[in-house]
Image: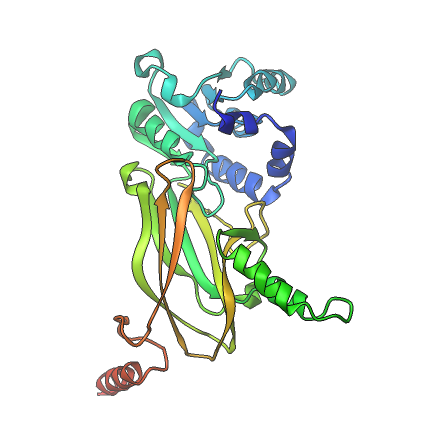
Length: 336
């Protein structure tokens, strides 16, 4: 069995996810808000885990739910179904969805899955959802969630910097510098305060799960971006978060401005502190490229760019002279 699936046999992981009420209730509310869409319908739950999403679907009125789970947890789900008296509605399939023969199951009306990993695509489980979409979902079927968005913003990281300034009266700045060098080699998962965001979040990827292909997931981002600082501060890293949207219009966000989730946020740590002022532009390029050797992981590359060289949006709110001139001209035209 793939080590990835073995890791999900640990009950500690499922307690962490089930204890994430923001996550669980987002799915439950989205399902129950559209109960009429589940009445008498057939549903597939990809990566059923503890089975809770499958049970929500049964409670919402589904006539049949296929709970697809590749790990040995599939046996435990059977017992949970009996506990909740839904064993006649939910059928557990102990398999990877890719190993299920397309002709062995009827087409389903709805696919539900909690596939998101850190920075949205870590673990590569979305590939399995798209396989199920292409092979098992009715042409007009629904996906829960149906869209996904990835955001980034320059930020302050006081936990990476301030701690080392004074450790019980002793300066440890050198250790802090070495610590940040180490941390800057790979993304870090931590909770970032919304007050430490230096700019509005930039949307760097928008995924429509109804039509996106697996190949399109191999590279996310890759464009030049300008973020305009909304306050004075210290540019110490990049904060990355995601949001997913459901067919009822609701959204589950993992941003610093939202309720805390077990995903927290993903930070790219800068080894050095950069002082910035309100209206300063921060230019960058971020690429998330699938790791060829480990397709469930992504290689993340942040490139810092020269804000005076790259093209800005029009109008741009930054303090560069060219942007100030353009804003002034546009304001004068609008006044006329």
